Structure formats: structure tokens, C-alpha cells
Amino acid sequence: MLTGADWWRKAVFYQVYPRSFYDSNGDGIGDLAGIIEKLDYLNDGTPGSLGIDAIWFSPFFKSPEYDFGYDVADYCEIDPRFGTLEDFDRLVAEAHRRGIRVILDLVVNHTSHEHPWFKESRSSRDNPKRDWYIWRDGVGPRRRPPNNWRNNFFGPAWTWDETTEQYYLHSFLPQQPDLNWFNPEVRRAIDQVIRFWLDRGADGFRLDVAHLYCKDEQLRSNPPFFRRDKVEQRMPFTDRTWMMNLFSLFSLPEFQVKKYNQHHPETHRVLKEFRKTLDEYPEKTSVGEILGEDPQVIASYYGSGNDELHMNFYFDLAHCRWKAGAFRRCVERWERLLPAEAWPAYTLSNHDIVRAISRLGGGKHGDERARLLAMLLLTLRGTPFIYYGEEIGMKEARLPRRLLQDPVGKKWYPFHRGRDGCRTPMQWSGGPGAGFTTGEPWLPVGPEVEKRNVAAQEKDPASLLNFYKKMTWLRKELPALLTGSYRSVTHGVPGDCYLFLRQSEEQKLLVALNFSSRRRELALPPQFLPARLLISTDQSRPAKTLHQSPALGPHEGCLLQIAGVEG
Ligand code: NOJ
Ligand code: CA
Image 1 (cartoon, rainbow, N blue to C red):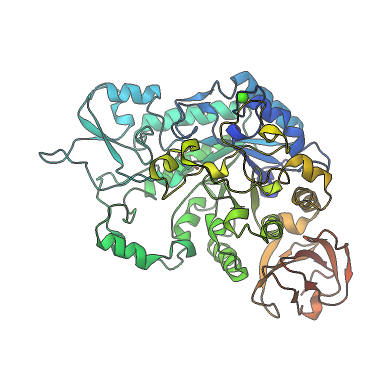
Image 2 (image 1 turned 135 degrees about the vertical axis):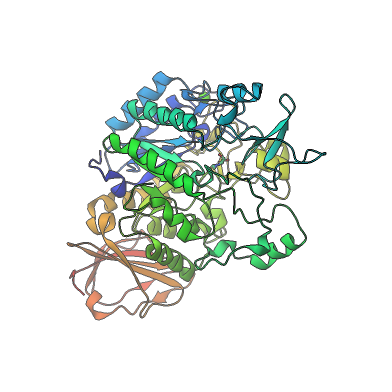
């Protein structure tokens, strides 16, 4: 097991979506006992396993599952679909025995409407828990909502409650009422939740939508999109400004700047309190889901002197177009913005995003690109998070309407198919139910299961899965990858290639990635030669010492060790 206060900086994380990982009892839903059965696949201490060091589990707490666990009805109970607290204890013990740390999903911007706190809160205006949520009167004779805020799944952020004749706020579904983070009792209650799981052996938390916790106390309405402030370091994927401006000129309500319902200064205080609690325990960590279009604002969640989040996902990388320059600029931007002591966390996919292989041109080059992405993810400066199934190149599934489960897809189909396509069962084999279940899987199995499955790829030395394994195990041996600095190399590099150096005191590595489907000659500076080729995405290329600049094959990535460390 990685140890020390900063173990998480050296770790490879893996995200498990519990419903879809492995079903141990044939009810079609993955469960904790199933995950335990598959821990050896993730890390059995040998290079035959995936070699990950920590798992982030999407929520498995008691929930009516309007948003598949992101609506928690009891923070300290396991949902019976997934198992029991005893199963959880066993999961922690079995994971730790294999050197795997356990990270839980802390979903505390909101609870489920079935949480006892909300049931109490909505029961009467003078209930002691009334102020645990955000309740307001309607405005004017027609009792309109208190302001123009929209929820993040489309539609208003306010729902009228008949019993007490007030609106309550929800940043997501009406079944996900927002907690009032200005209420000190709420803060104490969540602090107890954090301690409950830390005491039970959890190693840290992923913080769901942490940028939303606190909102404007005056509940001011958001301005239309065309009134937004200028942001210097805007993320490229949100740069469809002209379209957004046009829609907001038509006064379409969804097109507003979320000025007053996110990134409130008080949220930073909440995160500092979380951090204090985590720091009372040895070797705990956190990673925040912070969304926004200004990377400077996102970077601010590391706090000052590293007193807020340990890590903060940088989703820009998951939204890059397939261009070497786009990926390079994205990483450079983040490297430039982060405070010196801050540590990046990168991911290419998660349970809310279209699978990387499909998003980035899954077509005939999809598999080569998946390999290149794996090399990128596992060689950047920062902690990589692998979404389950990415290691076998699972593709986004296109589901017919009648099979959709995600509320987003169900409501907006065909404009938005929702997120079910990236949540399909883990493909363990090419057999029925992809070896995920002996029953009927809760979502259909994804495309091309006959080749995109663990059993088939374990047998094929040149498979994506085996490439992932080689990379994770090699990474553990290379200090420059674990702790070294990052620097882009652009001199003598073709525009469709992305090269960067990783350097520690004892080691200098060069990562060379060809994003094009053509062969590319590199013209490396003489001080980079000779160089030892440690691994290529082209698994037929042997490790050897190169005395001349190499050429990269189509979509090939190479990891090279440069002889001298100076220069
Ligand atoms: C972000 C989660 O990743 C997503 O799945 C969920 O729907 C929302 N937060 C609401 O909790
Ligand atoms: Ca099950």
C-alpha cells in the first residue's frame, strides 16, 4: 500500500460505478460483494493485475435512486441493493489487504427528498430543521419563484411545496433538495458523516459539485448569458459564446450566467473545515468535482497554502478536441494557473461524460487513440483517474428510449440521451450479460462486447488492457513520472504531435505522442539523445536505445528515458 501523507500523489485511481461493476447475486445490479470478488483484477500485487492504488466509488448509500445514488436518503447506511455495512467493512479490509485505498462519494450539496432531514424540514414552517434547506415564499400575487435560477438538469431550481406553501431550492431534480450550508447545524451534521466513514476506514472523499454548496444569501437573479464578465482563461469547450449570447438575447431562461448560485466565497470556508477534519486523521485525501468555465476560479479550490482540497478534477482535459495542440494548451494552462503546492488530478471520462473512445473519434482509429490517451493520462504530472471499462476500450452505448434510466435522458430524449450510455455493465467476458450478471442487467451491455471484454483482452498480449497494465506498473518504477516536473517541448515538433518532459532529480523522461494518423519524424534536440525507449503504444516495438530521433507511427506514443538529467 502506498503510505505517507501524500500517497495520493503517487497513486493511480480507478472509478467504480457500483451498479455496473459486478453483480454477485443475479439481480442485474452490481453490488459490494461483487466488487470484492473483482478486487484481484484491480490489484493483486502482481503485474498481471491492473495495478491501481485507490478506488473512488460512486455512491452506494441508501437512496431512492432518482439520480442513481446522487440523492442520498441516509448518509450512514448502505443501500440494500448494494449490501450492508458489514459488506462495506469487508470491502475496506479486502481492499486494504491488496494495497487499494477506498474513496467515497460525498454528495452533500443536496440530499434526497426522502432523507429524514428533508421530511422534517418540509413538515412545517416552524420545524427545527426548516432552515436546514432553502425555503422561500412565492413572489407577487401569482406566487412566482423567488428568482430565475435554473437547475442543472434543465428547468427551474425551485419547486412549490403545497404543505407549507413555500418554494424549496434544488440545483438538480426536485427530488434533490439543496442543503443550507449557512446553517451551522448542517455543517456539524455533515462533519459527523465525514468522521463516521473515516472512522470506518475510508481513505477520503470525492466531493460532488462542491462549487455549489453556498449560494447568494440575497438570492439575486442571475444575469443573461450575454452579460457575462470577461474571463481571461476561458475553457475552450464553452467557447460557443455567439450561440449562447443569441439564445440569451431571446431570453431563453437556461442561458444565464450562474453568477449567484455557485462559487460563493463561503464555500471555501466549508472546504477549509472539511480539510481540518481530514487532517485530524492520518493519510486522508479529497478530490473535488468543481465545474465552471474559469480555470482560475477552479484552481482557487486548492485554497491558500493547500488548506482546501487535496486535488481538484480538471475537466478541461476531458473536453478537448482531438488535436495535439488542444491537449498541450489545456495542460499548460492548468500548470500555469495552479499554485506551486497544488497537485493536479486528471480524468478522461466519468459517469457523466460520453466514453472517451467514442467521444474522440471511436471509428477506425478509436483503439489507437485510446492507447495514446492512456499513455497521456498515466504520464502527466498529477494523479490519473481511470473510469471503469476505459481500460478495455468500452464504447458509449446508444440506447432506445424505452431502456433509458437516467432522468436527464428520459426527460430530454431525443435532444439529450442522458448518461446511461457510459454507465453500462462492466464487460468481464463476451458471454451472456458480459459476465457482469447471471440475470438481466439493469442497463444493456455496450457495443462490441466480443472484443471489448476483460477475458478476451487478458489473452491478447497486444490488447489495450495489457497496455494499461504495463503502464501502471512501469509508472510505479519511474520517479520522474510520480513526482517530477512537467515541461512541454515544442521545438522541432510537428504540430500534430505533443511532447513533454517529466524530470525528477534522478531521472528525465520524454513523452512523445503522435495525434495524427500519419507517420511523423521528430527532430529532437541533440541533448535528448541517446534515449532509451521504455514503452510504445505500438506493443510490437521493442524497448531499446535510440541514437537518432525516432519517427512515430500513426497515433503512436512513446515513453523515452533520456540519458543525462541536466539540460
Ligand atoms: C455530479 C454527479 O457526478 C452527477 O452524476 C450527479 O447527477 C450530480 N452531481 C448531482 O449530484
Ligand atoms: Ca446484485
